[in-house]
Picture 1 (tube, helix red, strand yellow):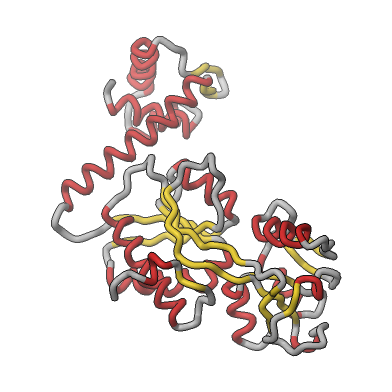
Picture 2 (picture 1 turned 135 degrees about the vertical axis):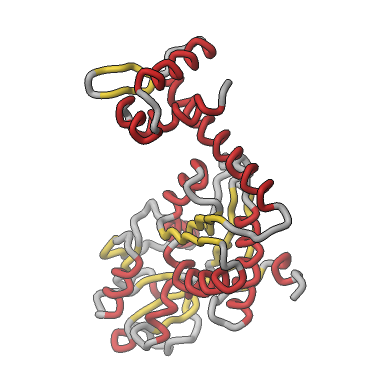
Length: 318
């Protein structure tokens, strides 16, 4: 099987048109069509259905595209690394970050990469964990931070730290008898007006699971899958919320929010650095992973990223 055939087929699948793919590749349309026919003959299956509106992939076509993307990307990484072996580390690295981690990590990591790896182009992509997992699977991102993984997800995860969830409120709307900073039991805040992400969000699932175990019912008055807007609402006194400290680092820093750690139970969640072992990893990506470990440990030790370092990260030299 010719690697060109795979690259051409990927382009056709993305353009959904032989003519558009022809223009993109600089290959005559009849020649492109012949490449597809040869692929179909070699594999013994129909890969696409042609129509006046363009092309539609068959099930076999979708399967081939998935493998073709992985094969061509691995080849590109191989060629790049062979050319750069022993030389400058360079190239793009896409990093998926949930909003709460991005709040404390994206800027210092970007600055460190720029200084230590000037020929690496870091692309920090912020989104909810569900989207990030999909991007890890299809190769849109090279690595990512996540909070949890299902057993069926065949990613490689490195445990960096554990964050303790906290209760947040506007200073002038503090609803508790104890002052901010003093630990508060979950039972004292479950009945307050809470603003949380939707039930499908990992944070809300974690909080709800602990509340259910204590026989508590959360009084969620607003659901919003937008962290900045949740913080704005809480800062305006429209309710209260539960976050990891990193998520509200900016609002607490300028005095718009105050917080207290939650106890009875203490609710923690792990922060994982995740890669997809099924996809080839470039030298640039490996270099960014090493810097990420260094930056994360430094932020935790300086108290900027509140959490407890995992033993493996704590034990790293330096």
